[in-house]
Image (cartoon, rainbow, N blue to C red; front, side, top):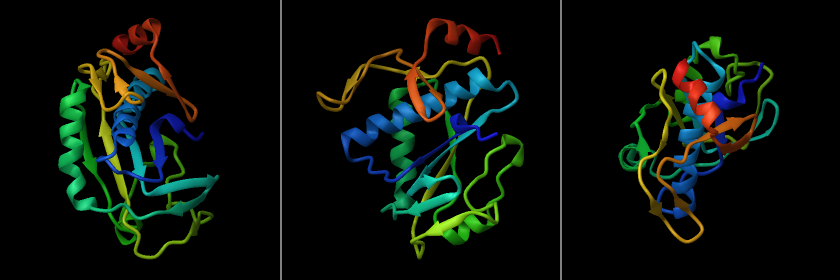
Length: 182
């Protein structure tokens, strides 16, 4: 089973742009809460930046600039806008790093290059970022304060999301209760 709530591919990561800051915070919160909703034995999810899934097991790669400097920006965004602050681990930066990466098979995800049938499109020296994020049990992750990056991209304190397939939606009170009981 492809657990889409555990894994999200993003073509780009430019945390200087308001839209991407907003989307990043929303994606992190949604994945963490989805793990709490759908899995009692799982405590991590993945955001993969610089990769677009074209169809099942086919990926297009795009370079992410300043991969080495992004960790501080991510730390600041999570610290300033997500409550509680989740822990994260950047896992890889280049294709050579990814070939050596071993993702736990128990999550049931056909992850990037671990399957022989995976097709790789336009790959040379592309820099990508795989961000592993961890959640605490019995915890709902939410926006920590009101913030307006711009008129189109604002966050309201205590807003929380979850993923259903490839869609993201607002977490309901019933879903919050379910997460808190796990």
